[in-house]
Length: 119
View 1: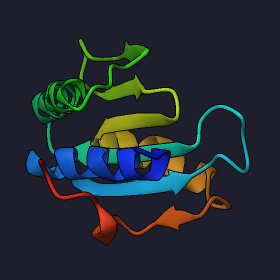
View 2 (view 1 turned 180 degrees about the horizontal axis):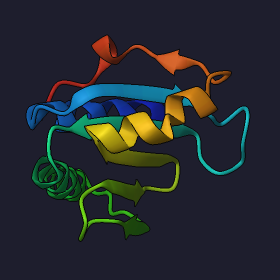
View 3 (view 1 turned 45 degrees about the horizontal axis):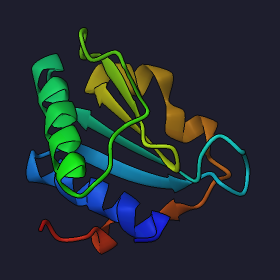
């Protein structure tokens, strides 16, 4: 499975739990940190935590484990590092405040209509 397909699967898994406004950003040509950022929100910190747990479970079933997870206890901004994909899950007001999409405005967006359907 290539990285873009893996990223689209992540989007699909988050949409299973009603993630808000997912954005897939291709940052690999701008930085060596990762290939893609996936940014999504939840309407509450509990939903953000549920999104994180669901994504971890579904990715584990697909054979992928995160290298690191930050912020899961608070649920305001959870970062899941899958190496070639870094997932940022925000409580909506926190997402607006930090505006990662604005920081990476030069990076191309991948249409989420192409998200992989759930398994």
